[in-house]
Length: 450
Ligand SMILES: Cc1cc2nc3c(=O)[nH]c(=O)nc-3n(C[C@H](O)[C@H](O)[C@H](O)COP(=O)(O)OP(=O)(O)OC[C@H]3O[C@@H](n4cnc5c(N)ncnc54)[C@H](O)[C@@H]3O)c2cc1C
Image 1 (cartoon, rainbow, N blue to C red):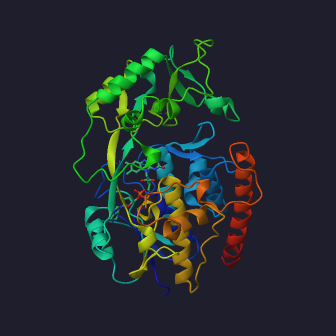
Image 2 (image 1 turned 180 degrees about the horizontal axis):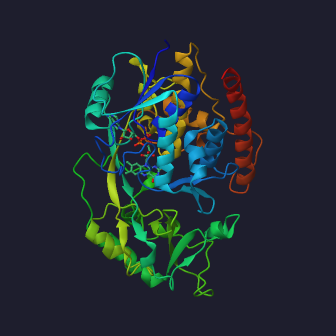
């Protein structure tokens, strides 16, 4: 009987890896510790749970690298993308989903799959033999984390991201706030009005920044602040970098017109995005924070429209465990010192739900092909998948390695195109056209073999 594939962790990466390998005819066992052992961020025992934002970010496959990654995963029959499409919520150009039904559907699809079994329980040691994928994510249990650190000898890096707060819609003052997506982006009226906007004038913005800077924050112990990931900076850290930083980041006032005062241009705008299908919850976009809970409510109530806001969840901080992948992993995601073990997901040093699922897709396929007696070439660097895997397994500087989102900076340049801002649209289109063609070429022999 053919060897089984064991996958540790049924999050974004583990779920996708299992789906891909199971569909290729390989017997898969997912080992998931929840609900027996929890993490501070997961709320359920479901597979594929989204721990924070309900967004898979931009769905634009022509002009955005994460949108391109969506496209590539859809072409490869990706579970995370097809389930996200089923539970999509209006969110302008972004792919946001109703999180609980999403995770329930991922769980159902895996449990019902004839080639996939789920065993609930924590894995605490590195397996000695057999084919394994470790996809235990940023909140890898401490026993397994210690076993990995023991094996690799390399220091596991730890740093902090932060969770954005969630507000009850019925506590927002809509006489001050209004619904509009930036630049009215979207095909339908629902999409064009997917965001809830709270405007600030200059005095309100200055007062907000003063209070934010003075607010009580969770202090880190020495050695814990190994550096924030720049895409996920807490708002108070952004404010500390300069009083105007937030106005050029999550609070930028562009592409929006306040219908309550159409002639007054807001000085800053706080945006909230729908967090569930019912429309009862909204998260404050980009407002991840490490302020103490009491301080958070004081600061957020200064936002016009949120004076009486009730919070379903306040912001928080979390640890992120990831490997120094450029030194530890082979190009096909194996641990160099134990080639029977692959790693996938955020623990490999990618950042984000989509990137984590993407690395699961590749690891699942690579392990399945190997069990079936072959060897899978990794996708070309010109694709979004290829750009990411190339980066983490060799392209990145090992000494300064930090988690990475997919972005066009990871792609080899397309020659002969105009540089700078003016050429950007054509350049991105050229990247994504090339990536799509190369991705389909890479997929074709695998589809033929299936
Ligand atoms: C608090 C927090 C908020 C985040 N917010 C966002 C966000 O808003 N947007 C975004 O794109 N990304 C976010 N991320 C980053 C990251 O993309 C997600 O964590 C993503 O879910 C990572 O996918 P993964 O499959 O690698 O890990 P996970 O989805 O976390 O899956 C890992 C799974 O492994 C299980 N597990 C862990 N240890 C063991 C063990 N020893 N034995 C068995 N099972 C185990 C866990 O229970 C979990 O189900 C956030 C991360 C954290 C921690």
